[in-house]
Image (cartoon, rainbow, N blue to C red; front, side, top):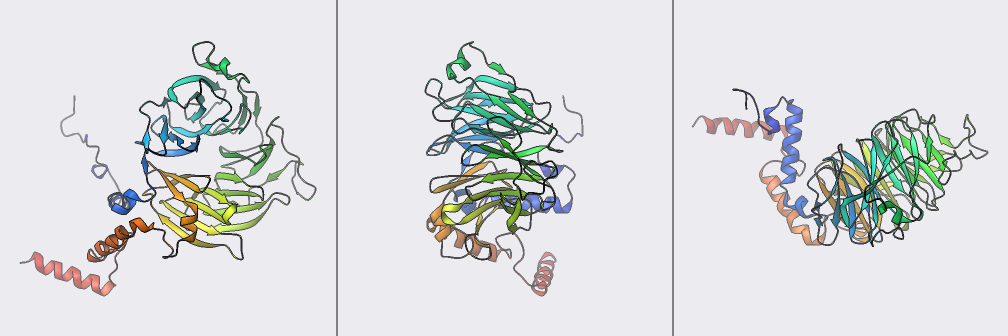
Length: 418
């Protein structure tokens, strides 16, 4: 039963919004109708805001959605499976276990949620949950799978990191006919003073790195969960490996490790490349907005960064002063996650899309700073023509001078009087 005179509209314009918010909404909606953005990056539409994703093989992606679901997408057909994993809160992070850890021929997926649990399920049949990891006292913010062993790592708003051990015999997950509840193997607490937003394993899978809202970075033995000792030239107060708050001023949202070092992305609008021996900043990439994710691709000497607002930047970092060599304007909302497989890197966003990019095509692009594939160049030219005729540039801002804007306003006023 509705209340007479009550506003029951779902149109966001019918709710109180500032002029700036209305302008931002109108700009976003205009971008969503842009034919170029509808096609660039071969978007997969998830039907929900993508908070993170992982790759489960050459043709499969697993998506973490704010709509309380984890979905499985086919990277070839660009379709999501109709069945999915259900949580009772937003799914913040997903991961896929080793390709050798198979149940009935299916890889095993993990989904972490605000409901304080991590569900373990079959990628081929995502509606089939085979285990639930229970032990966090607050939202689970990130989950990482060991690339070989049945080990899982999770970070939470409760300021703890948990190491979980799944059965070595994967068949035990399905033995009882109901999801198996698994308790923590080790709880790491008392080190981070804020929420754990991001974790990663180094390429050897021997060291786990963690970071979060306290802006510090710590390192752990991936097998035992014990703190890694600091090298002799590290000035740690507790003799353990740590990069303290200071270089990053606030939340660290993403962390990636390579053979050469560590990269972090932060709300302080910077991405930093770290020297692991000295725990000092080697490279600082400054942005004009919050950076949510980072992806080093050392094979071609670049680092990719994803930002609030949807822009992806490609930085050359292997020679001289780091510089932006490419911008990708595809997502119409914040970029949330970046991953690479072979010669393709993938990006997800709050615009509910997962997109894919050929690394070599992006890096070698010759027609300007903004990357537009050759097959879509016609749409870019069309966009420029339409934008110019409407008096706006591609970002919705006026291309007229102040005097021309005033003359146009006077002309429109005269027409209104006719």
